[in-house]
View 1 (cartoon, rainbow, N blue to C red):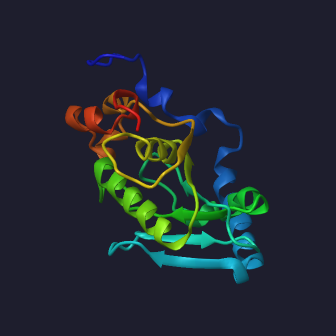
View 2 (cartoon, helix red, strand yellow):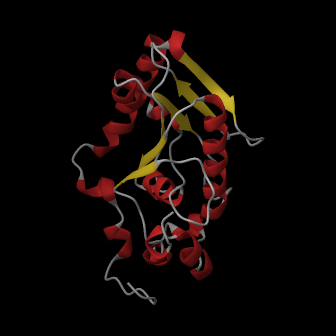
Length: 203
């Protein structure tokens, strides 16, 4: 889609929760499941490991019972301005059962940070994870986290990432410039060009 973007109702088209019955109940349930998982796996979890100096620049690392086959990095979503890593710990269960370590990084949210800065933070988190866990690294995430996961696979970044698995990523940022949410995100045409995975070459 080429700028300028003329969508009839860009706010509606990006309002996922508005079309999900009971959406307001989901996040509290995620938080409860995640906390229970962290409690149950306390012996194999290293929580709040700093990968940078910022308040949100830390990650939780969950380790399998045996030497890891590799590591899955899961980047949370929330339109780059909602949630944190503590909501998603229970999603580590599947990779752990298959013998992979799981890292869940936090990152600075908007409006404190622009999306380009978040890309840099997740790249720093990946480098830190590589120093902690040997083997192939797979980066995944959903929504805004899917966008950041996809960015880790673009050729402007030199990272020790074997593959990326973005889940419903926001791969083209241009349409978000027309949303009310962009008062928080502050995406401009230059950032849309440099931070949209759909416009970038893959590594």
